[in-house]
Image (cartoon, rainbow, N blue to C red):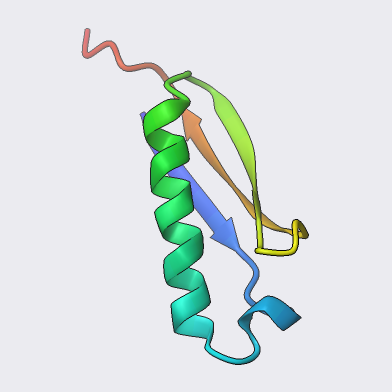
Length: 65
């Protein structure tokens, strides 16, 4: 399995304190990863204003055959 995540931090949501905003986004992402337990799945990442800033995906299966 492969986990991939891309986040574009070049927008207003990250202007004041990019590290704090990224921390909030990653915390939300961690919750989603735990909730969405699908293989070959892609999900959009949004900032606090609802603007898409990236995506994350899980590719492959969780069978270790």
